[in-house]
Amino acid sequence: MKIECIKTHHLRCHLEQPFGFSQWAYNQRNVLVIEVITDQGISGWGECYGPADVIQAAVEKFYAPRILSMNALSTDAIWHHMWRSSLDFARSGIMMSAMSGIDMALWDLKGKALNLSVSDLMGGKQREQVPCYATGMYFRDAPEEILLPELVAEAKGYAEEGYQAMKIKVGKNPDFDEKLIIAMREALPNTLLAADSNHAYDLSEATRIAKVLDENNYIWFEEPLSPEHPELFRQLQDKCTVAIATGECEQTRFGFKKLLDAGGVQLLQADLAYCGGPSEALKIRTLASAQGINMIPHVWGTQLNLAAATHFLATAYHEPGRAEPKELMLEYDRTENPLRDNLYKTIVSVNNGQASVPTGAGLGVEIDLDQLKEFDICATESK
Ligand code: MG
Image (cartoon, rainbow, N blue to C red):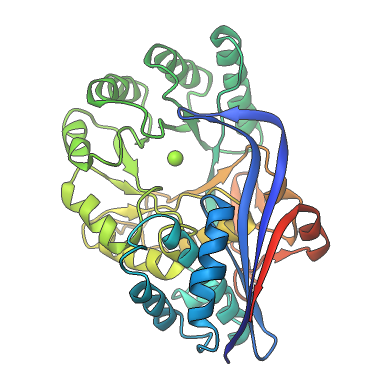
């Protein structure tokens, strides 16, 4: 079964209400989706995390010509062929994101070709349902005294929908962040809460916020510090109890090894649409497991990445093993995203805060090709 054609689609939608985090604000969503088609007519889909137009060029101009006619089922062989052909340029960044989307499409394709789900291909499901945590509480352009109660109300809404865990944004400024962390805990005394600064703090600010998270029983502190200074994570972790989580902007087993070797990180969050794809995510998970650390994917995008992460978590062995293990939760972004909610015929079903592992072949989600045309602003075809 040979790769005969690779198509890419840059999808875009505008948001009704812009939202922001510690670095900037979004008023539109963009994603690159990739379809890999074989000479037997079977195809698979994947998506990439990162700037869609730039990644599109990497797929069309660089990788597609190099993997056409290769055996489509040879996921690892194709990965290493791509890796070696771009080693000087793809050790991190956009090129690795392009490789990730291609790899995800090949896993979907292989599942369809063998009539197996991606979790079957990953070694088999250990659970039928994966608990979700709601990601939300992004900043909006409003005075802080109005914004804070709005964010608390949003979180209460997720609790009413059945979510037992959620993640807030921090990193606006430390005074506001402290008030928000405390207000959330007071409003939701029984909810698992995590906080994500998107690398907004220096060490002294992160230490101050970690203390407040400790006092309010938060379960993790995500990207407290710049990814450029992994040695600071160790210093921060030595000063607090809350688990330090990071990894959404890290890539490959080699990048994660350096992060793990620096110490201080207790939860890895590789993105399957960015870290090197499902193939590389499994290697990163094995590396983390050897150090007693769990990996829960970062998920930001459409149903393809959500499905990939759901299969990944369905097959996860929880470190440490025990009869009633700590739950590894699926990130379920609740912000406005028509590319997640209006593009697919078959989706990852989430009810009462629990995602059902898709049972169809491959990733088990299906794009509506008519809807695809509505969002498609630039398509390419390589054959
Ligand atoms: Mg994050």
